[in-house]
Length: 412
Image (cartoon, rainbow, N blue to C red):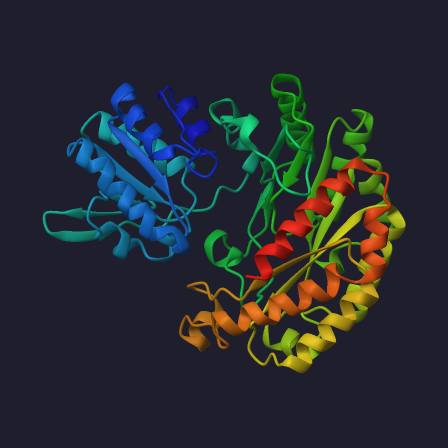
C-alpha cells in the first residue's frame, strides 16, 4: 500500500521482501549499492523489533546520511521508543500511505515536518510526536498496491495452491473487543472496507497481469459487512470465479445461505476463531461467541463444501488441562479440516497486556505441551489418517505432507 501511494506521487520505489528471500542480507547490500535510495522504509511488529533495529543500523552504516523510517504495529504503539532508537530517523504511527507521501515530499524539498500527522522524530535533542492521522474513510481512494514490485513467484502456503498465490487486505478496523487481539488497537474499532467492485477489479488485475490463481484474504473479519460479501460473491460468479480464495471470520458472522454463496464464488477455505471449548476461558478472552454458534458455523461450512480451519489458542488465562481435554473433545465434534494452534501472545495495547503485564500466564514450555496434545489428538486420529491417505485430491496430499511436517516440529 505504501509503495503504491509513493509511486502514485511520482516517487521511484523498490521493494525487498526479506521474509521470502533466502539471501536477503546480500540482496539488501546489493540493492543499497545499486539503487542508492535517499530514504529506506522498514516495517516491524513488536516481535520483530530487534531485527528491525539491526536492519536500520545496517542501512545507516552503509550511508549515515540515508533517512530511515520505521512503520508498522510497534511504532504505532510505541512511537517515542522507536523514534529514540539508534539508527531510526522517523517512526510512523498509524496507517502509513498518506503519511509516507507527505514525509518523503518534505524530505525531498528539505521542508518542515512538524505538521505531518502520524510521525515521531528527534529534533534538536527533543522527541516530537506529531498528532495521529485520521483513518482513511474511503479505502477505495487509496491506490492499488504495487504488486509488480513483489517476488510473486516466491509466495505459497501449505494449504494454498503451490504457486501463484497472493494475500489481500480489503478492510480495516474491528468493532469487537477480544482481550488478546490488537487489530482494533492498531487499526481502530471503526470498520471500513474496499467496495466489492474495487476488490474484484483488483483480482481481475492480478489474474491478467500475474497469473494469480488463489487469493488469501487477510482481513480480521472478512464477512463483517454481509451486503458487501454478497455483492462480492455475485460479481465473482459473474466473472466466472477466476480464483479460489480463503478468508477468516467469526462464527457468528456467517450462516448457511451466505456460505453457499461464498462457495459458488470460489471460497475454498474459511478460518474460524475458536480459541477454546472452555466457556470460562472464552469469557475471559471476551470472545462473545457460544459453543453452539461454533458448532453451527462448522456444520454449515461443511454442508456448503468449504474446508474449515479451527484457530485455537493455548496458554490463555484460566486455562487448565481440563480445558485442553474439553477442547480436544470439541474439535472431534466440530470436525475441522485443519487445526491452527498458537500459544497466547500478549500484545501491547490489548486488555490482556494490561492485566498480565505482557507475560504468558503458563509459560512457553507448558504452552508447547498443550499445543502438542491438541495437535497429536487431531492429526493422529485413525479416522483422519485413513480419510487423508485414501483421498484422491492432490491438494489433500499436499496438506498431508504439511501436517506431517508440523507433527515433526511438535515432537521436538
